[in-house]
Length: 192
Image (cartoon, one colour):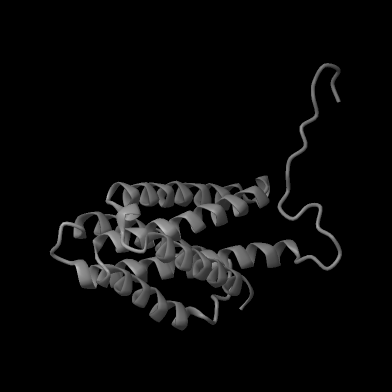
């Protein structure tokens, strides 16, 4: 090392693993699997909301968010194929559950649909932030994708709040239930 120069250690994904912890590949595969499932679920939530709210003032913001989620899903479709990661076996369940959550929240009204969006996006923000912290320089491209999508999800949350999410009847119940359900779905999709 040259005098006066600091040695900077490059962070590698999975370093510091303990015996019994997932391997680096298992950890990354799990991240990709759950993100793919989550983006698929998000697309289905917005499709459910649009099925109910098409032709209303809420259609525009929902359609815009849905288009970004389609981009996210296409990106994870590509990543999952390139890296030969097995999708979650729960995809058929998330397909139906996502649509039902979107349609169900929209049936309660546009503000409830936005409360749904806010709740889901707040959980995804936490999830993506945790993943980005775990990825080292060897996975800089995946980390950048996750951080880019996290910024989109935060913009969706902010748009939902701007559209009146917090004025939804039963706001606390809606968001609390959806956040808990989203965390369970994440936990399951990382494992199954």
